[in-house]
Image (cartoon, rainbow, N blue to C red; front, side):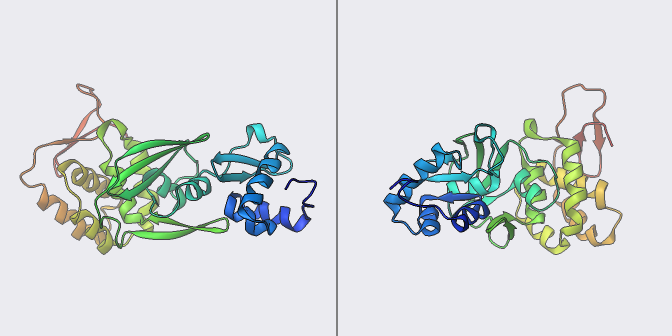
Length: 264
C-alpha cells in the first residue's frame, strides 16, 4: 500500500496534523488501514516529508510549510508516545508543563518506579529517566493537556522537592529560586508538607527550607512546613547547594545549615 494506491484525503491530513505525534497504530486508525499497511503508509509519508521518525513505530507530523530536515517534534508528546504508560514527566519537564518555565530544554525528564536511572536517545530527543521508589508518585501527580494528549506530570509540590533533590553538580541556584517563585502560588501547603516528610536526606530538606524561606517564607501558610524542616535539621551537619569550594561568594544560612552561592 503506498500513497498512490491510497488517496489521502484532506481530512486525514488534518487529523494527522492535529495528532502531532503518532504511532503506527494511530496511523491505522486515521487512515482506516491495517497495522501492516499503516507501516508502509508511514514509510511513504516520510519520503514525502509529511512524517519524521521519532523512534521505531513513532512518528511526528511535519507541518506543510516546514523543512522536515530541521523539524523538531514536540518533545513532550514524542516522549509520551515513545515511552508509553508508566512514566511521569518530572523535574525541569514538569516545571515547564506546569507553566513555571517558558523555554523548553533539550532533555526531557521523566520518573518511573523501580527502574534504573538512565539516559535514552529517541532520535534527536534526549530523555533522562529518574528512578523513584515504589509508591513515591502516589498522590503526587496531576494531569496536563498537551495537544490532543493528557500527560501525567508530577504535582507542583513534588516538582519543587524533586528539583531541590538533584545531585549538587546538577543544581542551579538561580533556576531553583525561579522555580519556587513560579510554583509556590500553585502549591498546597499541606501537600508540600506531605512530600517533604517523605523526603530522605539532609541536603534536599535544607535546600527546600532555604528556597521556601527566601521565596515565600513571609507568608504564614508555609510556617508549618518551615518549622518541620527546621526541626528535622536540628542535629544535622551543614549541607551544600550548587557551591564551589572556597568561592568567596558562598553564603551560609544558619537556620537551615546550608552553604549556598551568593546571588539574589
